[in-house]
Length: 338
Ligand code: DAH
Image (cartoon, rainbow, N blue to C red; front, side, top):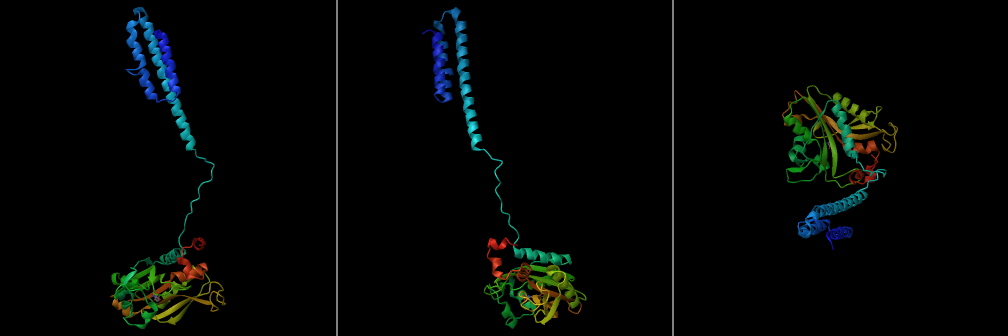
């Protein structure tokens, strides 16, 4: 076989190998490498007549270029195929409907709390917070409820020690505020409170209150009434009236329970107000001189009013819900309605 024939054979063989799918690098080494077949041909040039050497050399170079090109072609066709497969696998159908993300919303208790806070902030009150784990002193004693006072019974709570408990009301924030702020004071304090009550439609061992406190020179019950009247109209509607009923709280004197005219029937009597025409919504009164004195405020110079309301109770009325337990069950079918 002469060199020409040999070169043709090498080319043919190389192409066959390429088409059979063998590793491209192995083919490159076998034909084009230093110990490859074409190099071997070059080495055998000694047997070629000197005048034929240039043309044979040219043929070897051509064969080299030919095989190299074939390898390159094969390589790009592999890459092309791989790219097609990748594109196919990663296809995005932009016409497909999007995945719906369920966006949550504020819990009805939080919504109510925010609404109440907004109303009082609009009247110039600031918001302060107090601890839920509280000293007996702040929760009871400083509020004129000494140990063994019978009024403690209605606010039985959870005790951590004899002197540390889960606060049963937001009223201790009154004491904490008066202790470290000089009048004029105008604050509200929303937050969680605790009582050792079994859960039923109107009770829960954990619930929320919002306290209010105003202390300044010359504060009267008229100021209390004006503030609560505005508040009631904003929450229950412009035609709402309020009514004070005498009551007893140890930390206010005089004290009152405050009713609003029924938002459902306007006062005629219906299922919501149980025929009364009025619905009780909060407790209030003039801050007891004993409490002022306890907090280092001179009752001969300053006077104040305070009020406390249950946020759940207001949420129940605003949303027309009849069972408090629904608020805490985390049932989305319920929560989604508000
Ligand atoms: N802390 C009272 C309760 O939980 C509510 C209350 C009544 C708060 C009268 C007050 C108030 O600030 O003046 O029953």
